[in-house]
Amino acid sequence: MRKTVLTLAVVAASLVPGAARAVVTPGSSLILAGPGATLTTYAGVVFVEAGTGVEFVNLDIDQHDVLSYGTRPPDDPAPFCANYPSGNCPLFRTDLIGLAQVDPVEGVEDLPTGVYDFFCSFHDWMQATLVVV
Image (cartoon, rainbow, N blue to C red; front, side):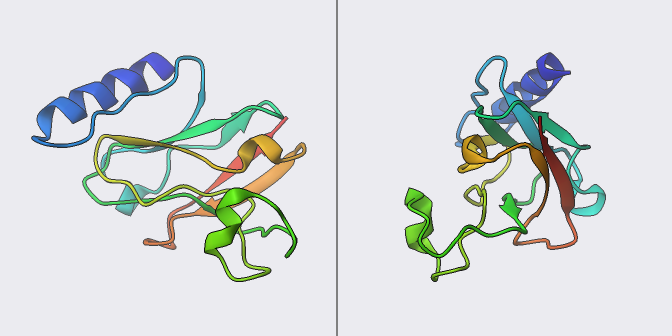
């Protein structure tokens, strides 16, 4: 499956003039917004081993991001929390990215084992689940 996702990302990137080229880290866990994700949402449930990272791949023509429903404590030192009002920093997040782009999911490597729901802040009906094992 990962080989297929990587192939799709490379093909999609090659079709978009001037688009940033998708580069997926080999062996990484992926959150995928496939073609038509605005209507169909993210691809499946994502499993990741505790302490490791996840990358978000967007293969849809619309821009998407990943944002956890859960939030960090107000005094959390995560670097990305500086961009959020106190008490509203998500457990994990990405930037808003376009077609054939890849972005690391910030904060996942800090999560304890558990089940975490997330959504696209631009299309809030797009929802999925991250399972940390």
